[in-house]
Length: 178
Image 1 (tube, rainbow, N blue to C red):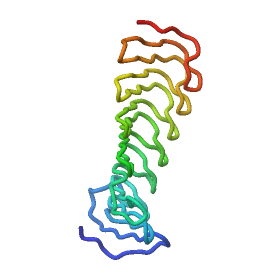
Image 2 (cartoon, rainbow, N blue to C red; image 1 turned 60 degrees about the horizontal axis):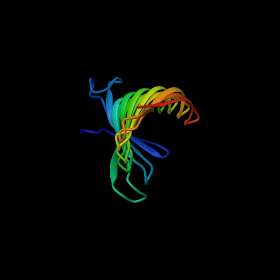
Image 3 (cartoon, helix red, strand yellow; image 1 turned 180 degrees about the vertical axis):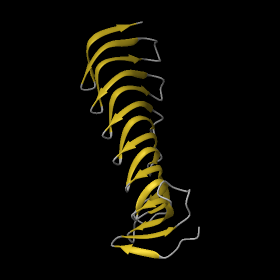
Image 4 (cartoon, rainbow, N blue to C red; image 1 turned 120 degrees about the vertical axis):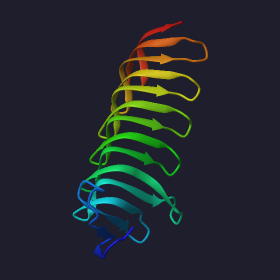
């Protein structure tokens, strides 16, 4: 990896090389956070993640490191396209702005459910599809992480669906049709 001399900045240590072409900033290196923290490898700008890079976090208080994020960074924050891997095994693939899910994304949940849709400031916002592991599905709009506005819920078991308005995750006025 050829890491050069390091610089200590409080809780993090930065090591950088000048291998251009590997990141948007022209420097590639490694950052380690605190004595119990994680590790970042990738593009650097001003001692912070910038460009493409990977971040590993502790799996538990003293456990091994696991890949927590791979993707693009802007001035030390997730920005652009990336993948988040939770300690429990959930995966989110999508876009980020200022460290939060923002724009189109796809979340694979532990129970087998999948949500694909739009996010804003870390929350489901706009059109989305929630496919449940049992085959049921919701297609409709979300506001502030809740089903809100027009949407359709499909029951896989009996082939019926509810079409109508949703308020705070609850169906309010609509019809159940075969």
